[in-house]
Amino acid sequence: DAKTTQPPSMDCAEGRAANLPCNHSTISGNEYVYWYRQIHSQGPQYIIHGLKNNETNEMASLIITEDRKSSTLILPHATLRDTAVYYCIVREYNTDKLIFGTGTRLQVFP
Amino acid sequence: DVKVTQSSRYLVKRTGEKVFLECVQDMDHENMFWYRQDPGLGLRLIYFSYDVKMKEKGDIPEGYSVSREKKERFSLILESASTNQTSMYLCASASSGSLMNEQFFGPGTRLTVL
Image 1 (tube, rainbow over the protein chains, first blue to last red):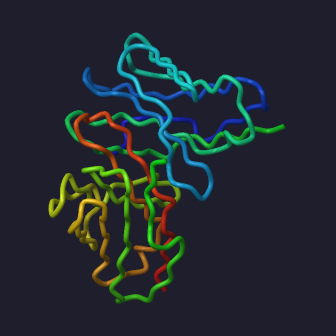
Image 2 (image 1 turned 90 degrees about the vertical axis):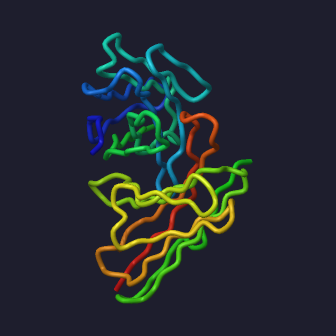
C-alpha cells in the first residue's frame, strides 16, 4: 500500500505558486520522499526527491517538515503545461520499488 | 536524450490470447520495471528486473510473466489474457549504483481485452 496521503485535486492560477501537500506520517528514518508527475497520455516524469533537508532544482522545490511526517512540493510559477497528476512517493529503503498512490490532479487555469 | 519505448500505444486482444508487451531502453540501465495503472488505484508494480535473465515479483504478479534476455529489452507476457487485465501498462528503467536513481518511464500501452 502507498504510504502517502494527498488531496485528490487542486487548482492554481497561471503564474502563481502551486503548493502540493503530502502526508507520510509512517515514514521511516531512512526512507526518501519522491515526487513524480504524469501529464495526460504520457508516462510519469521524475521531479525531485529529498530525505530531511529542503531541496530545489530547475523544476520545483521540496519542503520537508522537521518531523518528516509531511512535505510540500512547490512549483514557483505554475504554467498551463504543469497541469498533471502529481504523485508523492515514499521510497522503500534498499529496493528500487516505487509505490504510487492516486496522486493530486493539479489544474492550472489561465 | 533518455528514451524508453514501448511497442504499442494501443492494443486490443481477445480473452485467452497470449499477449506480449515489449519495452526497450537505450540508456544501458540495469534495472527495468513493469507497472499497470488503473483509475483510483494509481500505479502498481507487476515485475522488475535487476539484470539480464533476472526477475523479481512486484505487488501484483499473478497472471503475468516477464522475460529479460537482453539488457535493453524487458517483455511483459500475459499467458492467457483476461478482461480484468484491461489497463494501461507502463515500463520504466533506472541505472543501478544508487538506489535513489530516478526511474524513466515509457509512454505506456493501453491494453483492452475483449
